[in-house]
Image (cartoon, rainbow, N blue to C red; front, top):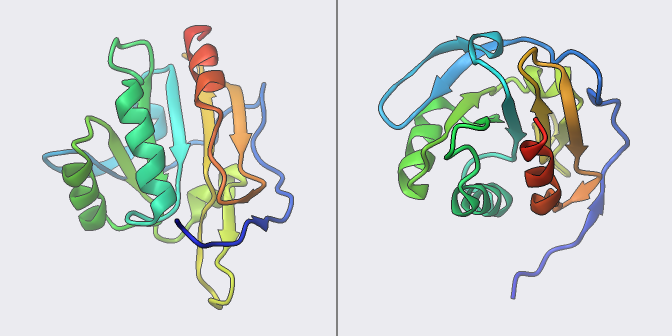
Length: 168
């Protein structure tokens, strides 16, 4: 059994439904290579999934669940992730999980700041990571669904997200 404390996270002023998704450019890592890519270069609809650093159990759990549920496999939505991990770490993570998804590398957590999906790591001065969050964007990259964790660890309601994906 995993032994950890549930921690309440500070409130966040995150991007919300009806708002335009902030654009950004970061390395986007796939199973073969990575390249600097802007969110606006990805045709919508998009499921933008923020997650803690690669290797942390929440990241593994979130991406195993998304992979097993086959989000985006029928072309209804493009699923991309965002975390503070480097492109090299993302490449390893994608390979180890057998994922058909691409992940943005955001080591500075600036993209997380834009979306209100960042937390300070307890007891680690100056170290921040993304808190779990899901933003569903329509064809125009307007936010149609937003969920940001209010405690650690926390996971999205996958069934609720899937229902919203079907409505995009």
